[in-house]
Image (cartoon, rainbow, N blue to C red; front, side, top):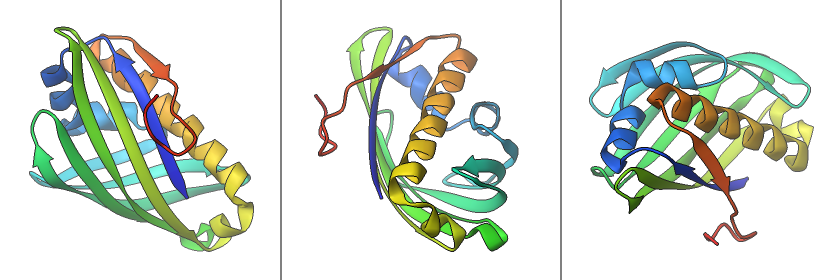
Length: 161
């Protein structure tokens, strides 16, 4: 499953970068996040309750940050397990571009593999649920930064419009 998104966030690129690397900010922003720990400067573990289509489960997972280029970009690589609900693993490339001194364009492209009950839901329903959760994350994240976020269009192939 491939996903892509673009958001205009009314905050400086450095402020957005710092927020994306702040465990408490992330915990408050991730829908259903019950626990988030920074295990090392580039590694996080989490417990998240998520509803994906008709499947609701508690997922435990880990995320590693790679290819760090502060404050411009990094790659997130992670995996999560939700017991009988299944599992997911994947990676996302995140880029931050300064549009103006206090405006940042955040772009992400992600690829995920899923298994178990999640794989039986169907890619359209699952993709819709994941996009909804991503939208909630960015709305929460911007609010926690004291900023606003606006979703921007993405072309069907994932390229930015």
